[in-house]
Length: 224
Image 1 (cartoon, helix red, strand yellow):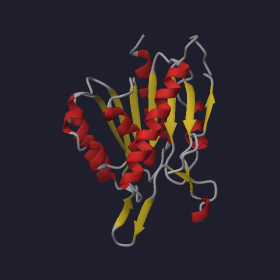
Image 2 (cartoon, rainbow, N blue to C red):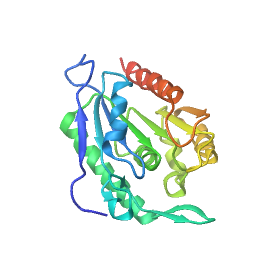
Image 3 (cartoon, helix red, strand yellow):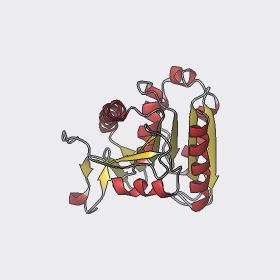
Image 4 (cartoon, one colour):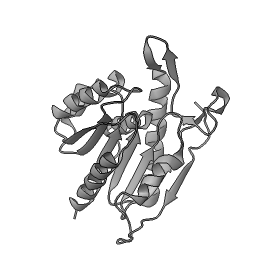
């Protein structure tokens, strides 16, 4: 795992109604970049100050120029997609420290995380570790990972925390069964949980974005 500081981009609110706006932090998926989810600022609640983080592992040498990863994956024919568990845990700790630093710098009244695919795993982990005071977490097209969800006591500590999870029924990267397993896990917790499935592949279609946007606004309005 590279030791250099994590890169990020940030944009002020489109609708600056407060001196200290709520903060949305995004984590992109494997092979993408920080600019990807950052574009969602145009369709999500305009009150957010949006900060999008770039993963530290450059996939250019592996034939994916412009692509980045939070931790390495293992593509084994006939065995599905494996992952570097130690690297994943290191990425979680590194991102957690980054978010804590940004929360201290910006002092947002509300802090929401949004992750897609590999980034969704990070978002789940930061919620369940409980070190950051989060207003809500949205995790799209993510994977059910035992090292993240294996702590049964974490479910009891969610205390009505808003959680949004989405998955595509046609996802051939992370099958929809993973989303349904996450649904079952949160359904047994104390979280304010929403699960949405769509007729889409590994991505975010307009219907998903509309539901995500409504959820974000509901989270912000709930604190008013």
